[in-house]
Image: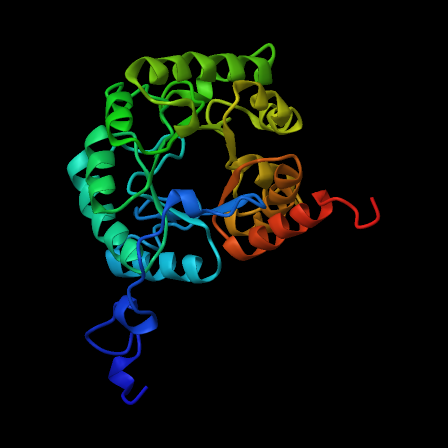
Length: 306
């Protein structure tokens, strides 16, 4: 660089987008790798994220973080403007869109494939208009059923997540006799609503919703029975990254591991999920999970002498 003022963060033009890379053609869902599990990077554009404490709450910091994930090899960047942690306060669609749309536009311009993490149909529509290629609705249509009609009309992939209740009530609804079987049955029920709205089977991705209306033991039981989701006939996304049940597992001297101390355990779950055929994993720390999915793909490859 000829000038220190041209370096990101050192002058008035601090956005890294025009400096680090030139604009690239828009990425397409159809061009995603098919020879390994995909890695979806989590980008929370919120002041109250459980994992990063609002570190990426402004457009500039979020864009910079998203670009780092993209250049580190993330296949998809999942952008969300509303915290989904238990007890989180609701955010209006208008405020949510003010947070996420500039970030989506910048990342798409850089060549990233972006998904929008939202429960609001209007935000999903604005995000798709801005270039997002996937809708990730952790409510499972429970907040805005009209999301199904939008997804059908837009013909974009939809991530259907299992959840009971909302951010304030979900912890009280973790009552299962057979958690894997009930999760599959409840996902199938919502899936049928998507079908009725005109969403086609190949556009649906299912997520068991680890941490959403599940306690620690139930999360582990779901992971142990991940293959039961295959009976639905859709791609499977696993989102275990930095979740509380990992912190509990890694407790030392009575203190649960902090969110950023859970990345090693997250990468281990990534490797196991990938080896068992998950379509994608959703993670905060892209690098270790990208390594993990490559190892899993190699382990699953046929032997050279077979």
